[in-house]
Length: 196
Image (cartoon, rainbow, N blue to C red):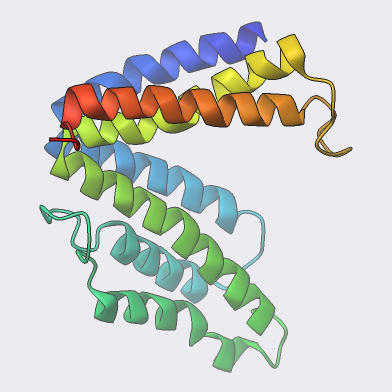
């Protein structure tokens, strides 16, 4: 537990200035996170070198695709997204017969690139759009996890699953309700009153 707290404090000391500064500092931070996550997925499998290069290009296309847009909706260039997907799928033609890079490998890698890449792209777009919206985006899971933990500790009795024995339905519901209320309060007071 102590190690987690120290790690969280260090991460916050790095992340908060990057978030506040925005623009190039935040882009640099997202690029570092992108590189670290790409390295983690690539080291899991022994992909051919060309697949690693094309996957990296695809990943960067996905992360930095139209991130400077001032819109949260419809800011993605789907032609570039299609290109990124094709770059990870085309090597299957050459490497499938030798089993070096199978269709299953290609779809697994493409799924990872899309899941993490689109998430990082959305973080860039949201931060570029508004610091207030970005903070809201960060507060929602923080509130949910924190209050699910405390709700489960204080009133939790019914286990959700055997896979995670400390998770309870009471904790889930507490986290959801408190997060919804606190996030709504944040939205009303810091982003704008939707009722007026």
